[in-house]
Every structure is written in structure tokens, then in C-alpha cells.
Image 1 (cartoon, rainbow, N blue to C red):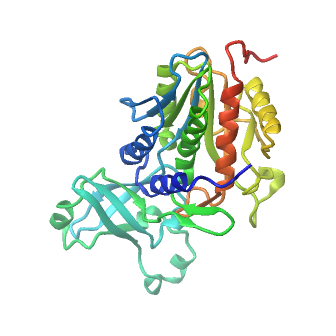
Image 2 (image 1 turned 60 degrees about the vertical axis):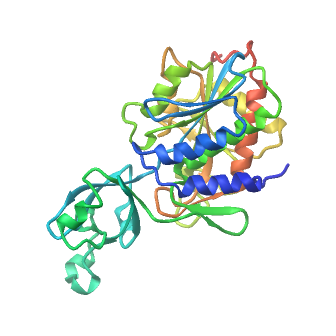
Length: 359
């Protein structure tokens, strides 16, 4: 089995990763995703929540939903002071320490605005301050404005921003970028749909790039998408924390390696029959995989989908990711290809008589 994505798919992935789109402002990467889907899907659409849909065999049964969220963590401008410095809050969960000194791109009404995150220079810190963790309130964004009026010509309060880190190809099929969480989920479900489109399935298969997962306290786009589609089964694709680097306790967080294949979740939000079919499919397709325990919630779209409507049997397939929620997350593209192949094979095996009632 080839574990190298097609060259055109890899270029699509890099374009997807490089396009700014934090939670609530996903329109640009969603358009990139839909443009790619138009090249092979039978139907492509969007909805008022910002979700994007691509489908094949829409008249088939049962209905299968493959979901990966397309938003990323980011920043939002909350205040512009008289000197033209921008103060910000976070969109999604950040470790403030990784923001110090970063370049940013603000998604403004008239186009992208570049800036840098500033803080008091080390030479000006007193001994007590040097030992303290940097807080968001101690940082600002400098866009080179002369004053408030000058800054407001280019930005507004409420404008989102992302860290300016583009996709970087590394040896051994690895790629580093911001927004890997979870553009790669949206990428994988579309690649799985592409694979199924080559041989028309009996089921109706929908790939969905969901919105606002990083801030989905009430279910985000995943819940509204699931309610709209009414699928018979759903598979969520997200990232999970790789534990194959220094300072991670495997006895606490499990053994998850880059290049080790997709990770199948067991426990919260995961239907046991869906899990077993995924695991059996991986074995039949000779796809390596790892297991991950989810004794509480999964912190993914699966939490929003499995309780939608009267309950939707849901599975969770994750891709190992180093340095999550940082400007340089890292994955192995072989894991992306394996995850897409697993989803495509799963969709082939689901029929009208498939019963996901736990027994």
C-alpha cells in the first residue's frame, strides 16, 4: 500500500493549511475545500453555520457522515490604544508562551494585515518579572501604526488573526504547520470521499468540513451538520496528541507515534459496534493502527454528533500530532493516507442491514 499522498493532494493540503481561518471565520479555507471537492464530488454545498458538504451517491442508503473540522485556533483584536497597538484575546486554547515574538496575519475587511506580537524586552524586565510566565495581558500586536487613527484604517475590533507560519515539508514524509488541528481532518474526509468516488458505493457518503469546533461549547457546526444530514452512522476525524517525544508519560497518555497509523478511540462518544467495524476493517486492509482510551469526553466533534437527534452511532479516528495548539504542529503524511484509506474501506462495508445497536 502506498502511504504517500498524490502530489496534487499534497499541494491541496498545503494550500488548506496556509489559508487563515480561525473558529467563526472559516470561510476562506472552507472555499478552498469546496473548490477541491468540486473536481470529483456529485454535490457540493454549504450552510448558514459555515459547514461545507461534499457528497457521492446521495440517493443511496444508508447515509454515512465523515466529519473533520476546518477551523483553527487564532486570536481576536479586542482593543486599539491611542498609540495604535492592538490588544488581543485568544480563539481556542493557546499556551501564551508560544505567542511571544510571533508574526501574525490579521484577517481584516480590506485584506490581510501583517504584524508582530510584542512584549517588554528582556533588558527592561526586573529580576522578578524574568521568572514569571508571560501572560496575554502583557503582549500586544504591532502593525507599524503611527497612532490609533492610523491603525483603525486597516483593522477593526473583532478582526481575527492567525500566527504567520506556513506549511513546511520535512524528511520522512512529515509536515509541520499551524492549523494542522484540524485542517488535516477536513483533508482526510475529502480524500476518503475521493477514493470512494472511483467506485460508486451503495451508501450515500458525505464528507463534511465542520465549523467552530475549537469553540464548540454548544456543539458547533458538527451538531447542526449532523441534524441536517440525519446520517445513519458518523466517523469523526481529528488529531490526537502524539506521545513519541521527550517529557511525555505514556502510562498516563498512551503510546501514540507519528507514522504508526490512525488512532481508534474507545469509550466516550464512541459506539462500540462502529469501533469494532473500524478495527476489523483496518485489519482486513492491513492498515496499522493504535488504540486510545476516552474514559470521559473526547474533546472532538464526536461529542457533539453522537447525542444529536435520537443518537447517532459515531466513531473517532485520530491522526497523531506533535506540538498541538502551537505554531508548528507536526504529522506524518503516511498517517493521513492510511486514515483516508480506512474511512473509504469502512464506507464500502456499511450496508442497509448493518446494525450498530450495542450488544
